[in-house]
Image 1 (spheres, helix red, strand yellow):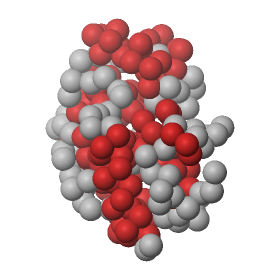
Image 2 (spheres, rainbow, N blue to C red):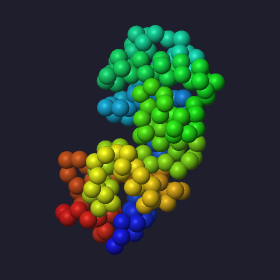
Image 3 (cartoon, helix red, strand yellow):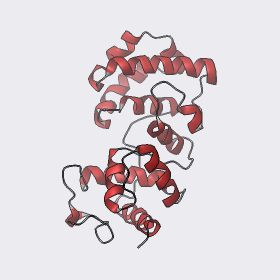
Image 4 (cartoon, rainbow, N blue to C red):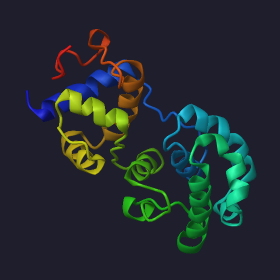
Length: 208
């Protein structure tokens, strides 16, 4: 079976197993998803979702973040980890959006990754969920499971992103990445691959 065939089987298996392919971060607009995803670095989505209601009640627009101090933003996100670095990034993101993008979150990956603290993973998530463009969000679950499936032998997220772009249908890639996160949390975990419970066991190249 080719890697392309495995990828297509994985798309269908995960679609059947997890029909609702949704982002686990809570947001109402592009700015909120951008901010929430930045906060999620080295922090659980559940913790981010506990922090963001108060944060977004206080800072509703890019201008609000741009006009804030690092310390003020930091008070809202202390439990997210690395909060000093993240609070600086949020303020600087606000300033850059105001000054360079008319306070609008850009819709291209090349522009998104210019924003402070925003890497390809966050940019792809925004591209896919907000702007409905083909996107491949390569997080730790995606790296681990796609390697176990035999789709690559890489560790570098950017290399994996481009490999998966070639293997996955563009219309399915974003949802595939959401579903693989759900699968990575429930079945194919970092600690143990529960192959007896896996919807992809028949074609996965990892042996139980």
